[in-house]
Amino acid sequence: MFSSINILHDILNENNILSKVKLLLRRGVAIRILTDNIDGQLLSHLAAINNTNKNKHIQLGYTNKLGSINEVVIISDGKIVIQIKHGYGNKLVASLSNEEHSILLQEILFEKYFNEIKSLGINNIIN
Image: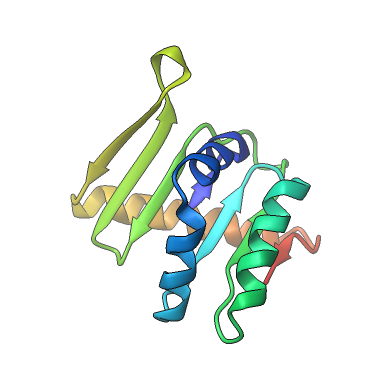
């Protein structure tokens, strides 16, 4: 997933996503998040989840050096991509696609940005 920190907060606060994420981790799903910023609220959410799961943790990468991200992108099992943005009236608007080229493009972008953060030499990857 890569995300605007603001949209990620909206999703985490409004949809009880944290309990669902804990279930996914228990099932062995690898979760990596890339954001355009970091704050104490997000760190506390992730610490709470990571402290309850001994084997699997959410990996968080963040930097403000890659520019602003204005959406949340979730890729599920390489089969579905969901994009969430702020729409009219600041409401969240989502689109879903199962088109292979859309999924592949988002996977490539995520890996590119995540690897760029690692190569910056700053410890902005949290396990």
